[in-house]
Amino acid sequence: MPIRVLPPILANQIAAGEVVERPASVVKELIENSLDAGADRIEVELEKGGCKLIRIRDNGGGIPKDELVLALQRHATSKVSTLDDLEAIISLGFRGEALASISSVARLTLTSRTAEQAEAWQASAEGRDMAVSLRPAAHPVGTTVDVVDLFFNTPARRRFLRSEKTEFGHIDELLRRLALSRADVSLLLRHNGKLVRQYRAVRGSGLTDLQQRVLAVCGKEFLSQALHLHSEHHGLTLSGWILPPPAVTDSTPEVQYFYVNGRMMRDRLIAHAIRQGYLEALGVECSPSFLLFLQLDPHQVDVNVHPAKHEVRFHESRLVHDFVVSVVRGALDEGMPLPGRHGM
Ligand code: ADP
Ligand code: MG
Image: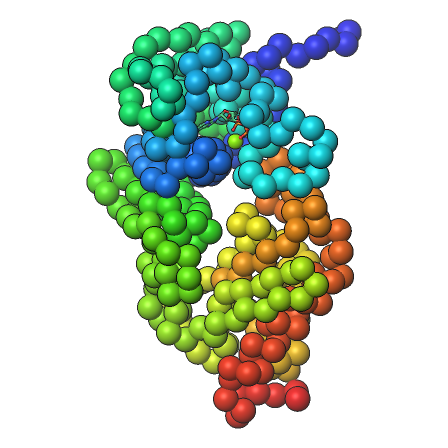
């Protein structure tokens, strides 16, 4: 075959392979967009675990009429415009790929109104050429994205979808993670017409305010047994809760959440550091439960490592690692009764 530039739909579907794995990945991208748009109320509505319908409605700033079509194009973003921006990202999105990718593997409708506009507009991406049609609509200030029939045109991807219950479970878990990162945002989840989760916005930003959200997401048992920690060192701040291992019971839901500048991460370096902190404090290996927030200068961390942004790269990874080890170890040393400790 001679070399050819891929048609847009195919290019987008290939990109979708990296970001859109299942309904939960669509929900993640769309909620992150709502958060980037400044929303403090986000409603998620699902049918059939999100396989039939995902609808996200927010009260954010909205998208102006003349940018609606552009928003659906690949590499179109309002969040990054220079290399400097890319080197210190503070928004959750920046690749300008999510809407284009999702619309290439589902039927996507974007309805939005900005505060400046008297009426709302709706854009739908349809057909193989990814043409977008625009029509007037009724909508308050903010945005609603409808994603219908995920993978309807990509049967190979559709086969990887699991049961409605499993897909719903992934979305429910995702919502927990997001709820923990933004206690100030109200999150609602409806499934097949029923309200299944409601995380009410917490007004203040103090410890007791955050605790309300932790209680709603992680439960009373976790919060009552967990040790609170807060530590700062060389521009790094680590705060949150860890469970001392003897307190972990079968009924405690698994809590393993780590956020870097508000972004949920599954990072090997961090996972290792937390285990190491437990090991040093207790003298034995264990599976730790934690809810931790690391804050650092955005210049010190590269989030542009993975399309789904699950991983980060720290410029001073040794410093970050050792800091996490010492804070976790210190909190366990301090918070645990002496007989529970070994290897001192
Ligand atoms: P990215 O988030 O990386 O910029 P997306 O494809 O997710 O790329 O979105 C493209 C653009 O569409 C965003 O940069 C933003 O300007 C706009 N947008 C998407 N969703 C929303 C929303 N819920 N509210 C306001 N603007 C939005
Ligand atoms: Mg985005």
